Image 1: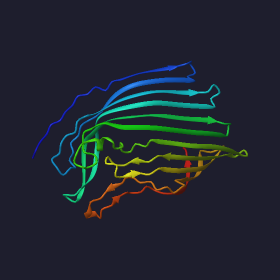
Image 2: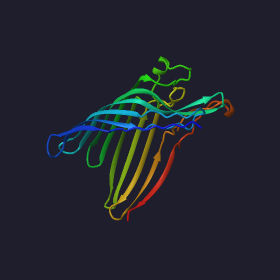
Image 3: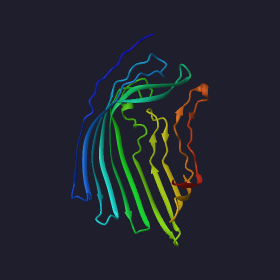
Image 4: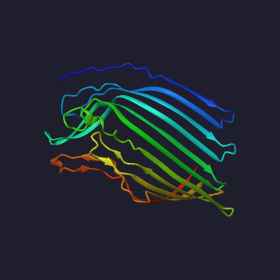
Length: 276
């Protein structure tokens, strides 16, 4: 039986700064650079002789701010970031025609850069109404490919042009919370959130793609002025959007096509909470 030894020693440094405009921290600016590693591993799922992967290295850069208005009614956070990844470790799932099965290989696939912007805000319109919003923009690309990602038998520009899996270009959410006093007995709080995620490749070969995701969640909570309890009625995924947990290609022996388990659709419920 072939044997292998693999070891590595790494240092994970981090350098950063923070700056505030006054003691109340109404404005805070920060930035940092950090280096991290994902240890190498042996691939015991492959149908060929297991081989050890190289260590994956991450260099992350982030610059951001956190701000609050003088009266506390508006809060805005923003960040711009960049991640340089060397020897990215991925678990690839490809049909194994020779053995009529799904082959899972843990390999170093590529060097890549992922960069983006995140922004979120909360605005207190009045003592009853709060508005929230957030948006994220991502851009990622391979700089160098180390593995045959599309299964054509070659490591070339066809692999280099593929999208990085699980990376959505755009995500955002909008929501509000509105609280209504109920005489002198308590209050009813209404919450509604809308979430969007753009399409993204599921696997490294880009043969499976997650569609756009649009979901609405809502809830209604009654909290009494006296007592340690509250009761809530909620609805999740009210648009009954299909949410897939994965999209894996199947070999002919398993009927071909794809295996795509789905997460729960539209749900309603009631929840009672009591605090001791």
